[in-house]
Length: 100
Image (cartoon, rainbow, N blue to C red; front, side):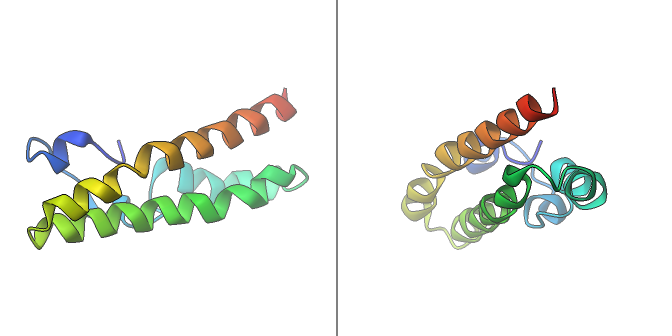
């Protein structure tokens, strides 16, 4: 899993190599190696890259804030994760619908 609320609460771990790099997570690997090439005719494929990259950047920002002890700021930024993730999932659902 890319992100866990438990990490922010100090109850979980995070693989920073994956969490901070949009090309290293499962979706990113698929997108770079298969999806972008085979599904380039679907407009959402080109639109999903930016929000996906921004999600990883946001997670890095949250982790950096946590490591600096700036928990109120980390919590505030964390509130953005859900809506960003939901937007990406909606695009993925649209892509899936166009494939089927």
